[in-house]
Image (cartoon, rainbow, N blue to C red):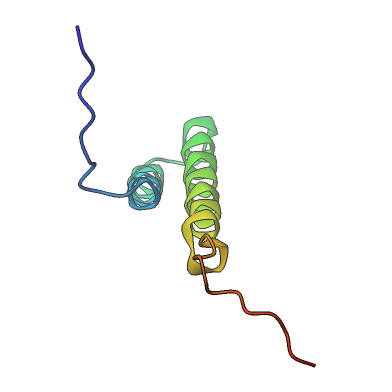
Length: 74
């Protein structure tokens, strides 16, 4: 059985952000306790993952294009 690769419609970072939002909404619907705390921690970690993913795919870390580096002329 072959695994078909398809382009995700939603980016990884956006999926993390969506999961954080969903977990936070569910947590706020629960009374204080361990389950609520666990969902808030899940939301915090998903937000952190989305932020780190943004750093990794951001333009600051884009690969250098050939010919874009010129020697300095001091």
